[in-house]
Figure (cartoon, rainbow, N blue to C red):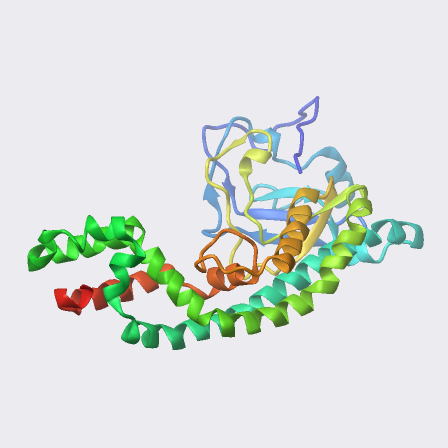
Length: 325
């Protein structure tokens, strides 16, 4: 939320002296309960470039009238935003108007929690299956798996030279061969992985339905949530210039505040579309396809590809050349 400078800037609270005032974080003032929510940035009060300190410091006249002179104005960017508790406990008429957007946001949070609940069992599956897969994989099928990548690397006569073998293996992996082997690995774990996925799908179905039902009305509510754990671009504030966004400290709570604006309906439309596609597509396309099927979710979640490739390269380096024939 931009804080525009007054037409008459009045007294200069923080005179321009060539110094850069530190920006320690943000403070959200709730106009309903007058509570303040402070968000500290990582690294604390680090300097920032700006053109005119009066663009942000001090708070505007309305904020001063409502909250008084802010002792923290020099370090915290000020925003007016309704806290989540007040947003949910408005008068009956306003509560009914906000009901659709709260239904959408609560459904999205539930979907995120269900997805995260799938990650640990899928990661455990990866850890259990990877050693078994590498131990039993038949590397003689590599030429059939990717003939072009094979001919330019492992099939090259230089592969027989121990001094060239490492570079030839890396060439094979980076030219697509590693992805092909990873696809075989994922296809072998997809059965168990999709069993885990099916629980997620069942749990998320009512939340997808809630989003579909409430999204048209939610987009017209007039408010949009801001999760205070999101990064902040200081360029959104008049007068501040900085290329890197500020990241909230790790101990920042996972909490929304509400500002005037419009809900990003496109994000939720894509979420529903991907869900519908995942319900209608079951074909496994090498485990790494970009479709939205259950196998794709499993592939993206279960496969730690950099780790997979490191283990694969180490094993391939230990094998004699005849193992690839």
